Amino acid sequence: MEWWNDFLTWLDAPSTRPTLFAAGVLFVAVVAAGLLAAWISTGAVRRVVAQRDRELRSNAIATLVDAATEASVWNSLTPQEQVLADRAVGQADVLVRLLPIRGADVAANWSAHQLHELKRASATFGYQLDPAVGEFRDRMVEWQRHPGRAKRGFQNDLVRWRTQRQEPEQDIVDAQDQWVAEQHHDRYRDTAAYEQPVTVATSPTAVVVSDPSKPAGT
Image 1: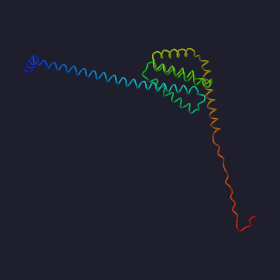
Image 2: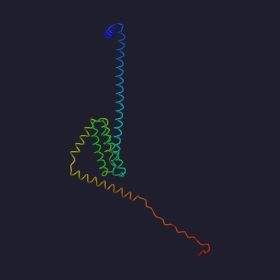
Image 3: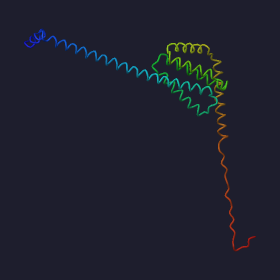
Image 4: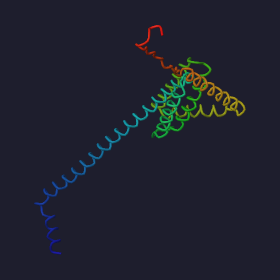
C-alpha cells in the first residue's frame, strides 16, 4: 500500500496540478479530435452513398424513359429490337425495385403498367404518342425529386386501374394484344423471307477445241 499512499500524496501536491491540468486538456483534445474525425468521415461516406444512389436512380429512370420512347413505336420495331428493348426494361425494373427509396416497388409497378399501355397504343395510334411519353418522363422525374408525394400519386393510379379492370373486357383486350403480336411477327417473317438473296446456278460453258489437221468448216 506504500505506493498507493505515495500516489495519493503526489496527486495532492500543488506542484502536480499543472501536470494534471495538461493531461486533462490533452485527453479532452484527443477525444474531441476523434469525434470530429468520425463525424467528418461519416458525412463523407453518406455523401458518397447518396451520390451513388442518385446515379443509380438516374440511370434506371433514363432507361425507363428510353424504353417508353421505344414502346411508343413498338409496332414498328423488329422482333429482335423488341427483345433487346424488353431486356433493357427488365434490367431497369430490377434496378428501380432495389433502390433504397420509398415507393420503389410502387414506381416500378406503375412504370410497367404504363409501358404496357404504350405498347398497346402504338398498334392503334401509330406514332402520335409524344404527350404520353412526356407525361411518363415527367412523372418519373417527379418521383426522383419527391419520392413521398409521387408515391401517393402512383398508388392512386394503380388503385384506379385495378377498380376499372373488368375480367370480360380484359380477356378481349388480351386476345386483341395477342392477335396484334402475331400479325407483327408474321409481317416481319414474310419480309425476311422476301428479302432473302436468291442464288442462281450457272451452267458450265462448253469449250470447243478445233483440230488443226482438219479443215475449218469441219
